[in-house]
Length: 159
Image 1: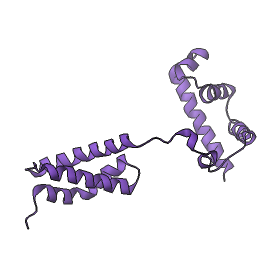
Image 2: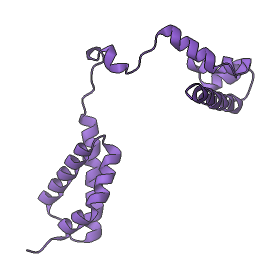
Image 3: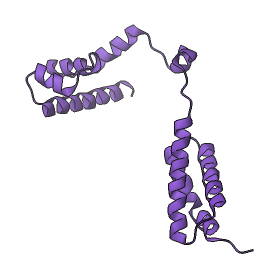
Image 4: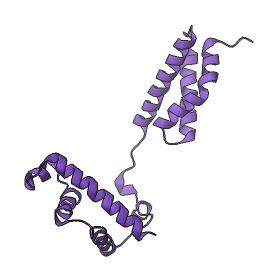
């Protein structure tokens, strides 16, 4: 039995195609299903003549299959999810405030203000820059330094 161009290309590219599908989809099973759907769609058409054409069509159709699967995914209504499912580790509000206070200890007053404006008030960097009379780049840089300091403090607390 002679193997056609599409079949030989699919066999040669199977691992690469699987990796591409995994980049789009969450699970190995979904990726394998997408590969199978891709193969069936191209097999039914039967209009592949060269190896490069087969490779291009396999990748393109696989990408479209993955995107279609993502679009068809049904969102879960928020009211059907229980709070216990969301919180693997839950903290009381007091504990969260205490932890945030600990993490903010090494920050300057201006950095604390920027952190609160970004985190609690949801302000954009442009608004913060205008409010605090600084450039947008300075506001971004400060927030970057704040995150770094808080990450270092958090890591010290967990040791």
